[in-house]
Image (cartoon, rainbow over all chains, first blue to last red; front, top):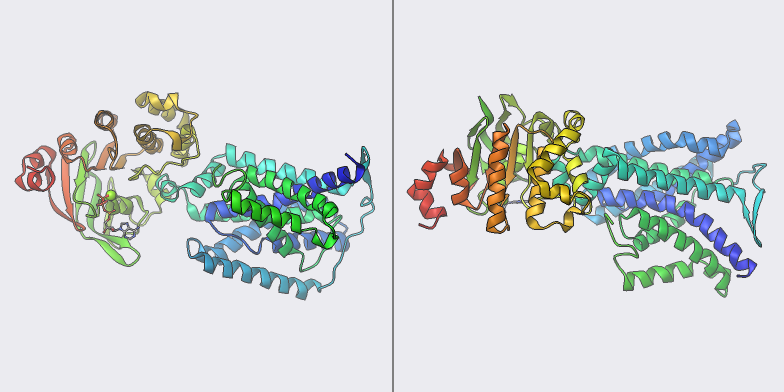
Length: 290
Length: 236
Ligand SMILES: Nc1ncnc2c1ncn2[C@@H]1O[C@H](COP(=O)(O)OP(=O)(O)OP(=O)(O)O)[C@@H](O)[C@H]1O
Ligand SMILES: [Mg+2]
C-alpha cells in the first residue's frame, strides 16, 4: 500500500471513531423512543464551544472539559427530553421531525447570537504532535479523539449489556407493553436514553476541538453523517453503528483521494448510503436489537 | 379480605370507553377465570389493573390497598403482575435476561438468585434454554418464559392473559398444571381464557364478561353446569 493510501486509511479510521460516538448516541435515542434527533449535531457544536471557551477563558484543557461534560450534558439531555421531546414521543414522525429540526435551527441561531458566526479554533501547544506509522503521520489529538470515542462506545455497550438499567433500555427499545408489564418506567428510560445520547455527541465534539474548527453551523454535517451511519449499521444497532462509522470514515477519506475533485469528497459516502438502501435496507448488520 | 377488589371499573382507549363499570372480587390463594367473547374487554380489564390503562372511574384495591392511582412500576412492586396476551417477551434478549427484567424493583432484585432457582425448578425447560434468545423459543417455551418473568417480581396476584393461546393440547395441560402449582405456592391467580371448559374446571371463581360488564359470576364448577355458559361458550 502506498503511503498516501495508508495515510487516508488511518485518518479515515480516526475520524470514523468520532463518528461512531456521534452515531451511537443517535441510534440509542432512535432505538429507545423511535425518534430521529435532527438536532443531534447541535449538541456536538455546543460541546465544542464548551471546550473552546473553557480553554480560552479559563485555561481548562479540552480533555478535562470532556470529563466534566459527561454529567453536564447528560443533565441537559435529561431536561430536554423531559420538557421538549416528551410530548412528541409516540406521535407521528412528521411532528417529531418538525420539532427536532426546529430545535436544530433554534440552537444554531442561539449559538450565533451568543458566540458570533465566526469560525474559530483552539491553539494548543500539543496540537502539532504526530505519531508516525510506517509512511503515515497521524496527529496525536486525532488518536486521542479516536481512543476517547471508542472507549465511550465500549463503556456504553457494556452498560447496556451488563446493568439492569441498560437491559431495561434495551427492553423498552424492543417491546413496549412487555416493558410496562414488568414495571419499567418508560418516561425515565426516555430521559436516560436522551441524556446518554446527548452526552455522547457532546463529548465527540469536545474530543475534536483540539484539531477541528468551531462554528454555529458545524452540526448538520455531523447529523447527516450519523444518520447515514445509523442506517448502514441497522437502526437501533449499537455495534452496527460503530462498524458503520469506521466504514464511513474510511470511505470518506479514501474517497477524497480517488474522486476527481476534492469537492466530491462526500459523494462516496452517499453513493454507499444509496447502495445500502437499495440492496440491504435493514442495514449491513440488521436492525434494532441485533 | 379480597386479594383483588374491583369496584365500578371504567376504562378504555383514548376517549373510547370499553369497560362500563363492574365489580370483581378474588380471594387470596384462589384461581379466578374471566371468560367472554372476543372484544368483551378481558384484556382491557387486565391492562387497567396493571396500570397500563388508566382507571377513569371506580376503584382497584390489592389486599385492601388502593392501587388505581399507582404507576405500572409501583403496582408491580405492590405485588400485581401481568403476563400479557401474546407473551410480549423481549425477543432479542436471552431467556435469562427476560427473567432478570422481571425482577427490577428492590425487593425482587434482592431475591433474584433464589427466585430464579425456583422458576427454573418450575420450568426446567427454561434452564436448558437459559442463553437462547426469547424470540427463538417455541410457543410453549415462550409462555413459560413469560410466566417465569411474571413470577420473578414476587407477585401476590399473577394475571395471565390467555396463557394457552396457540399451544398444543399437551402443552396447555402443562401450563394449567403449573397454574395450580403456582397457587399452591401462595400466589393468587387471575386468568383470562378462551379454553373455557378447562379454565372453569380449574377455577374457584369465574366471571363472564360481555361488552365491558360482568354478565354473571359464580364458582367455576357451577358455571360449567350453567345453561347460559354451556350454550354460549361450550357449544352444548
Ligand atoms: N389499543 C386499542 N385501541 C383502541 N381500541 C382497542 C385497543 N385494544 C382493544 N381495543 C378495543 O377494546 C375492545 C375490548 O378489547 P379487549 O382486547 O379487551 O378484548 P378481549 O376481551 O381481550 O378480546 P380477545 O378475546 O379477542 O382477546 C375491543 O372492541 C377492541 O377493539
Ligand atoms: Mg384479549
